[in-house]
Length: 193
Image (cartoon, rainbow, N blue to C red; front, side):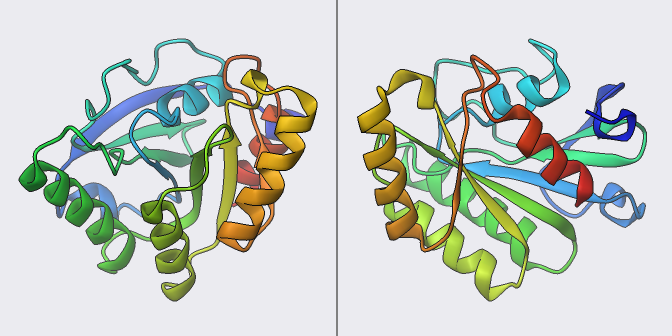
């Protein structure tokens, strides 16, 4: 990996729940979005080679803010709350949904790229399809990452990835945050954004 394609520094900056001056500072943003418990935090931690930069939890629905992490002093990784947590009260789930849609579609935030994370072991949820459609409508470049491929054997992986590609209508990057599979490719994509 070239020197410019490495993450040398990563730090938490702030969490927001709406309009904030951080959205106006001109620093490029790469956002990470996906359903609750799909591994958004684990993927960011994998990319920055740190175990606990982004706090992750086995309890879905823990992240309720949009969290900004400054990477190499030159871009933000933006960790969006997870959507689709079935046991969250409807009011809370709708609040999270509106926060994500505000970030993506309000025109206040300007993500250069969105990393849409799905679980390689299951079919995409309707919310995943909706998110891909919204990103296309808003003309925001995005990449779909299928996390947790390490949990599948080769035939399951091949079958599931083809199915995910067909449902979401785009190419998929296989990934394992646990084993850093796909890290080099995803790192190149997010740092080039």
